[in-house]
Length: 224
Picture 1: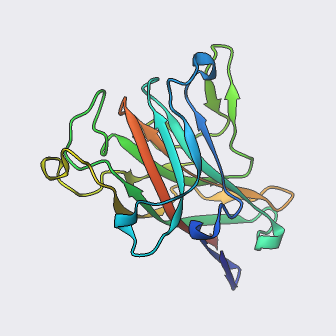
Picture 2: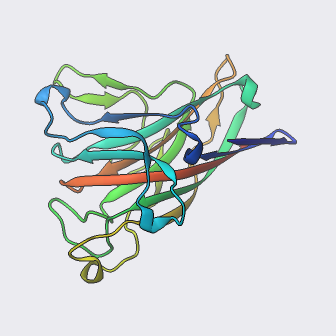
C-alpha cells in the first residue's frame, strides 16, 4: 500500500498482492438462512496464472445470485492517520483493476453475466453494513442504489464484461483483466471522528455464479 498526501489530496494504491490491506468482504441482498445455495466465498487468493507471468494474489469474491439482487462488496475504513480531516468534504475518484470471466455479449438468466453485473464504487461517513431485516434478508445500511441505479454511498462504475466476445470465450470463459475509472457522483463528508469508509462492489441482475479477482484499487480523495 502506498499513500501520498499532497496539498490535502490523498492518493492511496491498494495492491492486493500484499494482502487484504485492511479491506474486508461481505454480502447483502440475500436471505442468510437458506444454507449454501449462494456459494458465497471471499479472501486473498492466487489469480489465474494465465493473467500474470509470476504468481500474483488478488482479493477474490464469489456468489451465486439466487435472490436476483446479490451485492458483493469490499470496504475499508480511512481515518486521521490516513490524512482524513473531520468534517471535510471529499470528491472520490477510483481506478479499479479486476479479473472477470464474464464475456461480453452473452445471454444469461435474468440478465447478462457481464453487462448486468454492475460495478459500483463510492464512500460513506458510516461503516457500510449488511443488516438483517424483518423479512429475513440482509440489506445495506447505506444507499448503494439498486443494480443499474446509483446511490449516495456507491455509484455505477461500469460492469464486469471483460471484452472477450461471447462466441470466442465459449466454452472455457477465461478470465481477463479489466480496468474501470470512476468518479463517485456524490461528495462524501468525513464524520466527526475523521473517518470515512470506502466501498467497492458489484450489484447483480444476473441470476448465476459471479467470480471476480480484484487486483488493485487506487483511490484519490480531493477536498472540495
